[in-house]
Image (tube, rainbow, N blue to C red; front, side, top):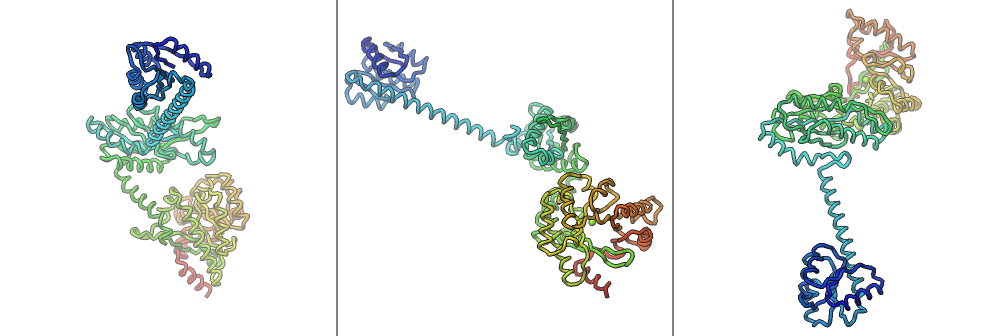
Length: 569
Ligand SMILES: [Mg+2]
């Protein structure tokens, strides 16, 4: 506490009174203008007490000085009788209170109140500071990713234009590296998101170490990162940086006792060669990334104009597919499966078609992989399943046909734990018995052997659904898989059938596949049978069924039932 008072007796009296009232404080007493000025300038005070009339100095000037140096410090006049006008004037000028020397009993309460009000103001200031800090945090989050502390998408949106301008001014190149961690989803799904987050942080750290100071590393979201390399002489610099990043990321990561490896794919676009504005540069880098992934991942690719055409088509298909179910553009055709001994139709494979509004009928070979990558396959797959089961049940009701209907299933569907429920639900809704549904799985699906997949397969066969292995012979299916799971049918890939009549070992392999399937207790169906010679060969080698143009191309539901009826006639 600072006390301005020239009367020694009063000084002592006030000290005593405050101490008697239990107010514990150090009191510094000053008597002159110079001392007072020095004190308020060099020290902060909890409260200032001041006499009003001093020989060389008056309380009014003291108040003005105190308010100037430390506006929030309580200032209390302790003085002889003051005129009302003066009191009003002092309060107007910021005095906290005044206590008459004749009534010093009020002093302790006035000091207490001033101190508590000052403390409150201090708290408020503290809260305000916290508010400012949270505001700063808010501003930080506006253009940063909270997990990796890297800049985010908003930042690049705001800053890329000026980086491009600067590159033009310095006649330099700039490269955008669009980076995606390969198989990150697998880490997240199998080891949990919190571990996945640590992998992202580690990856971010490694990327930062691979670039120089003015370069920017951003996280766009998920496992997608973008790096802006500045001040490049030519695109070789970008390639070298990409290779550095690729190598750094493929090094083992030790995270919470887990040894993990995650590689990355990188797409590169270069300014000004590939585009003049940020938006197209990002788009081209993204397309180049697609291409890097198509090329087996753990690699990098520069954007090329040729990618543009392919990727534009891909993007347009991906967009169109999202609406294909709702817009009723999908339809199913049915290809007869024929018993080689009797020549009769014994089954049908449901084949998905897409009637694209501009491109006409698009083949599944073109759009299934796109649907798988975008996840749209789940909705489409369920639609196909329901459509085929509804149709099979209708044929049954109409007395046309009571044979299994084969439906192709994507690996993406099969890896969903809920797939069994979906199948059961569809069978239930359509009233088709499980024994009349045959799901066709490709060999590549078996390669991604996982617990979920094995469980799904077992639950389906337990429910009575048949499983067939599709396109057999061109993938990398181990015999162990064939023995492990209960396939009722093996569909030999069309390439073996096509080789029949030629000089290659193809026909011998076709015969061997039939023999092997027999040993394993499976029926064999040969796909793509087109000629009399092929059919003859297959019949001689005990193949059970064929499917292909020799008997019939895929038909509409109507066409299929007409064909079955004509057979019976
Ligand atoms: Mg098939």
